[in-house]
Image 1 (cartoon, rainbow, N blue to C red):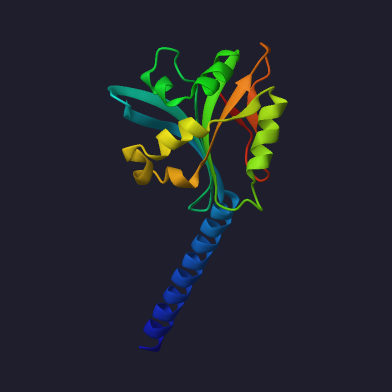
Image 2: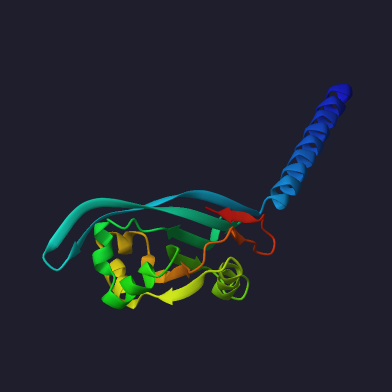
Length: 185
C-alpha cells in the first residue's frame, strides 16, 4: 500500500511540474507578442447632403496597433475618388485644397494614450513622406453625424486630410516604438 501512495504522489508531482513548465513557456511566448498590429478595412456606407441621398460605399484601409488586447492606436485612411458623392461633404475651400494635391488622403486617427503614442508622432511621419495636414471641419461635421459614427465610436477619432503637393516616391511609413514598421498604401 505504501508503494502505491508514493507512486500516486510521484505522479502528481510530475504532472504539476509539467503544467508549471507549460504555463511558464506559454507566458514567455505571450510576453513576446504583447504588441501586435493588424490591417483591415473600414467601409462607410451611404450618405446624405441637403436634398441628395446616395447609396455608395467608401472603403478605407484600417491599420490598428494593439497592446495586449487593447486597441492602442488606430488609423483609418483612404483616398477619395473624384466622382464620389462623399465629396459633397467637403466645403468649397476644402475641395479647393483637395484639388491642389497630387495625392490626398482622409484620415481618422485614434490613440488610447497620447503619452505613449501621440498623434504628433503620426503627423511627423506623414510630413516626412511630404504630406501636409489639412483641417476638414466641414467634412468632419458630416462624418460625425453619419449614422455609423456612433456604432464605430468615430467621435473619439481625430479627422484630418493629408495633402501631397509634389509627385515623389516617398511612401508613408509608420514606425511607433515597440511595434514593427508599417507601410501605408
